[in-house]
Image 1: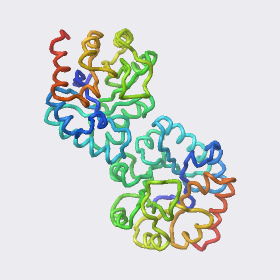
Image 2: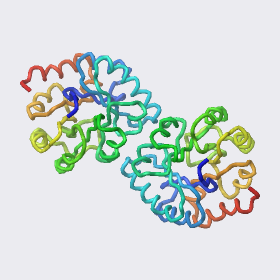
Image 3: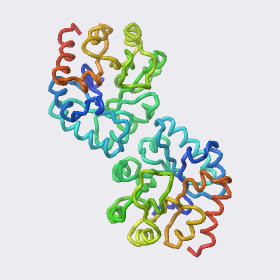
Image 4: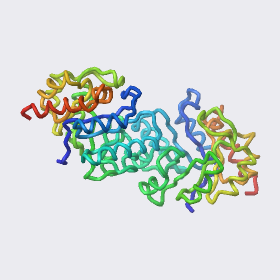
Length: 211
Length: 211
């Protein structure tokens, strides 16, 4: 397994930054203790995506925090990202692995319990169980797993599990109790009044836990 | 230079097929004499894009017609396409060349005369001069080149030139007279009442010319 620290996994969403400069929000989140960043851009050209990913890489480098790219394996290659996060409708994991090599981090979203056995057979480094709870950030997601479903997913998965969807300071303790390896957040940091404080509070939950 | 035949270059657009099955339209276009196909999908997931590209590859294989992918280099790798067509906001040509290898076809859209000298310095196999005329297919394009601009582009370019934007049976003779290497069409074939007849008529212009 790779030396990936999934504990506080930030998914960037420039719209969720509520008009603020996403760069400063991400800088604050890193200060607060984010351990991994996925750059997600849904309506950008490849060049815009690359430019933003390069900015995030520069911010994350001093912290040794890996930066991975949502969906576009070619953008990940172009910016020499640390990996990609793939959905069920994205490039197949095996193709991405061949393009990126074995040292890269590849994550896969799992939206149904039935997708976990297949994920176990794939060369991925973690799965993102999505969504745990209903969320306004993504509108195209499946039925939420809920905490009982998340616990079952953790038991079924042969890969580390990151929880995503409705993760915030209120829901995180219950999610941690399910045995996940990471908390993935979008709005809870990107949209927070003070992103550094928000990240630090979420990170602190790990330090207070016995995991 | 590669053994690419750019003379009748079809850009797929499923919407332009006017509700007909794009597969049957493309099959007819191939019968009519299309020499190259670019698969362009603007709102599809990578998996949908791959599935459609695989279908087009199967159709084109018996004709030996190359199939290239618009924008997504990762999709091109995933389906083992013959190459990619890139816009000015897509993955840089050098990165695409490194990902695809020297045997692949890489085309680049040029939307301003000033982009041609830069294109001359790049490892691309042709340029697409876009748009020649105003067109309803793409709404985000720059000022049309017109025939005088196209002639100048052909003179400036060190690469073969494909004309795109407003190319149809009426405009094609004037475009051929500018010395282009290829006619790229979307609606003139995808939206034609009889796509085979439309392709055959456009292809026939080449056979009647002295080029």
